[in-house]
Image 1: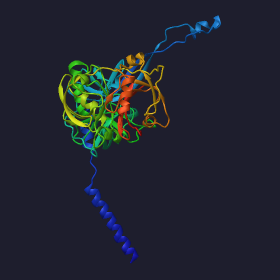
Image 2: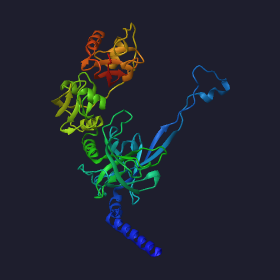
Image 3: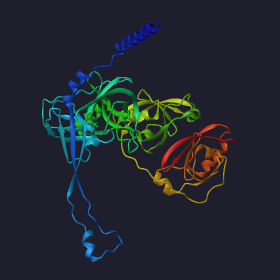
Image 4: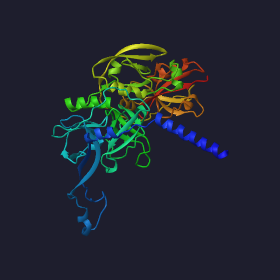
Length: 462
């Protein structure tokens, strides 16, 4: 009886599993890969590197018999090779890849799945998006379509093709793990809302396509997060919508122009949201502005929280840079901000992106006495003001360990530029504003540290 019951139970499990497998059948990627792989290319580059020669260390002497070993002399050039992936986006030979795949390359050779090879030239590159457009002198080539509609959803199946570790035209599959990921670059810029996937991407996949199940390119594989050098299931791709705009501009003018506001922003946490009158943390807090930048000319103010930009919701501060960057320079867009607890509608004329510089802090002398915040402050030195391009502020000379400022994370060397909703330009401004601040209230404080602006919240107990 027991054996019969066991057999029936096993049959039930098997039939249930079969039903589940039939209901949730995995996709067959074979037709997709067969159709798209001919348009994917392997990219090999060579860069000539000048080898350095030995030289005599400054201030040191060597015997004459050895001096010739340290005399400057021309060393033979050395060729450094690297590889990556890319794909044709038109039948007349345009190829899309990553900028870091071809950056500084002296020679670029692309190879197709049928083993044809072509020398490629660079039409243009865009380090900010890590994209580059190449061209080969050939026609009637297989090519792929970039998905122009932003319909990608978390959980959707995606496929990648590339040459990981030199293993040509390898395919891997997975799902979309997240969209709109912010990954600041080495220049602390984040103009790309990355697609995160668990597709196995490794060195050599860079610049290759990421497909949806319709065979359209939804992203360009760009980077991975890893501790071992290989895939651990955290891969990132540049969205096709970003790539389309970059390709169009590179074709037209060989460069990419982006919208620019001239602001430094930061995330809004719960305490900041409470102090600024928001019901929940959202938006991008304007911590600093270019004095004569587009934001300042359009009426934005330091301390504004940008909630909507050109009709789109700014849920996190990282949402704003891609929105601004994708906006055509000199266009006027609607912006909704929270200003001193009230929402306001503005019209902002977007400028064209330029660079920014950082600086380091200096200190002065003649400190003021301690105060309600637990700070000893002093006048702002003119060299610091000029270096950080500040209109005013006061320098923190000392912080009491148990004071409100210490709890807020203020340090010696910081420059306080705002208390509550009041701007601080001089020591007299600071004293006047501080004397009128209410006790036991959560208030914003704005300061500069190493030239970078930041907002915190502070609560005065007395």
